[in-house]
Image (cartoon, rainbow, N blue to C red; front, top):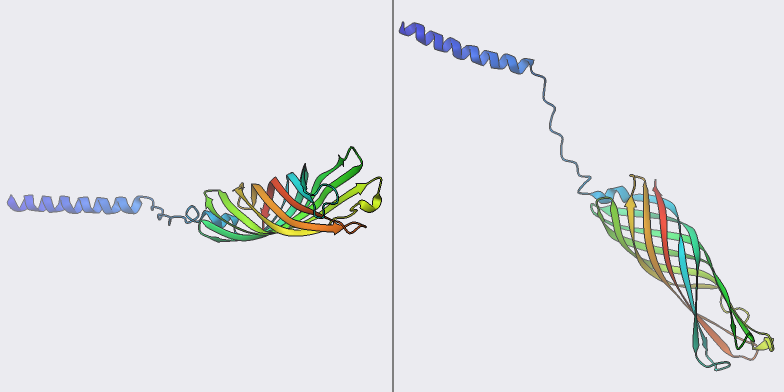
Length: 238
């Protein structure tokens, strides 16, 4: 009787093991556990590479006129005009996981122009910025789908300034500079809509230096130019 009990226990154990093995064979195979993705940790990768796009917004053009030789008023007067702007940009970004460095260049039309009467209309001061462009470096950090960046570099603008006296044309300055260079700095936010398309909001400040001219009497008028730009843009990455 004792031997029979031992045999029954052993048979039960082997039966349990066999049933478990058969169940494992019949059960569907488990899918392997996927390796963790690095895209979340390296979010800047979506902004990497070459891109091109368009932009539009507003620009405030400021000019400061200085009567260097005390021909008229012996001081400075400031003028400001606002208008629209639109343009194109190209660039390249290099990414380090969640940070980014890059370079961008743009060329833009500017619609700022005005004429101001001086000395009860005896003098007409004309101011216009027709176009501007920048070549800048960018650096920033990416949080999820958004890039927060600072930017700075070189700026160029095409301007047209004149001071016309109706009673004495020789005491006028017909053209005070037409192409000027300076520096630009700003900041922006760019948001990735897809892996290739992004939108941005950007603000730039440009200091375009000073230019001067002499009239027929040898007197000098100097004009300093600055501009502030606020715009939105759309980029496509290749």
